[in-house]
Image: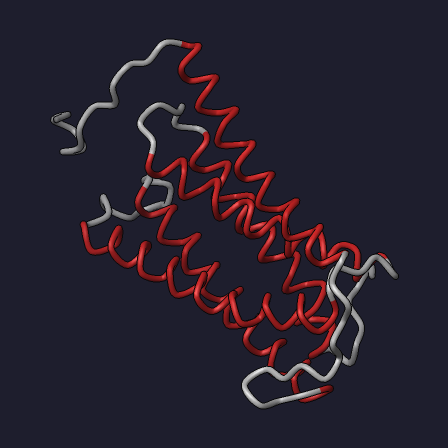
Length: 195
């Protein structure tokens, strides 16, 4: 245990073991993203798929609202992570409840993302018909790859400390891009600046 944080000091591992763990984790994360991409590209769109009973434009609006809630949870996650790692100005060290809240909000965000992603893949598949749709498809696949990467990094003591904020940043960026390219677009009269 370290006196400063009350956590176990990480075990030291050889550079080869660290490199192997990073390579394996990256390969699994990329494999998840690619598997979703391939599944979506080879799926026949079923435009009549409903989302909690809503279809067509109503499903798009519902998905945009759920996507906005997901982005809100991601913002909460970001603030909690910054607090946990002492990056919030004028805040004392984060109590244990902040770590618990971070984990619970993260799982809530993941669970909220599943019906949205399922509806996207089932209804549209992975499309590349426009810049907006292409970015949305890439971000959707990257979201789950980044989620897997973050879970693997959190669970491993073999990896360097910089990987956790990198995986968390990739996850946040994917959610932000998804929100921007779909939820904001839908709720803003089917327009998003730059897309």
